[in-house]
Length: 132
Ligand SMILES: [Zn+2]
Image (cartoon, rainbow, N blue to C red; front, top):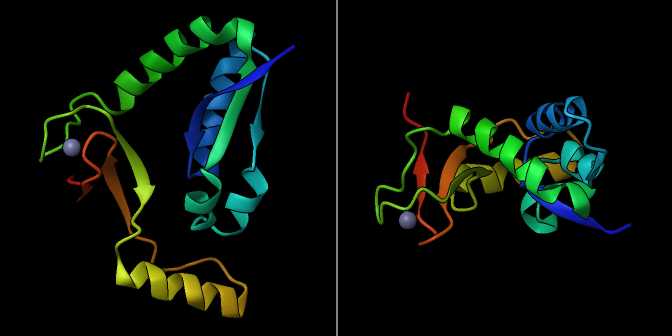
């Protein structure tokens, strides 16, 4: 039995919601690196995020289910720089406040308080803020 990463997350809550959705559809799956990201969300960038792993034989079914989920959450989301729809939600790596928050959380062993979340384009790498 071979396991593959179908999707990665930087948020344990979102990861568990999607995992529950796949389990409800009868797809056995588990989360890899969930605990290290839960301890400090900025580790998500170092570890590659929380990885949702499934049995390879369920790949197409899972992609179809996730595709519907993605459509629901990121319907009209496109990169303002290149127009690509390959964008995802991350902790900003460019924010000085994030760096400060990361160092503070390392020193005090607490959860980072000023964690700026942005969308990042996979095509051109541009980070842009969430607009309400
Ligand atoms: Zn782009």
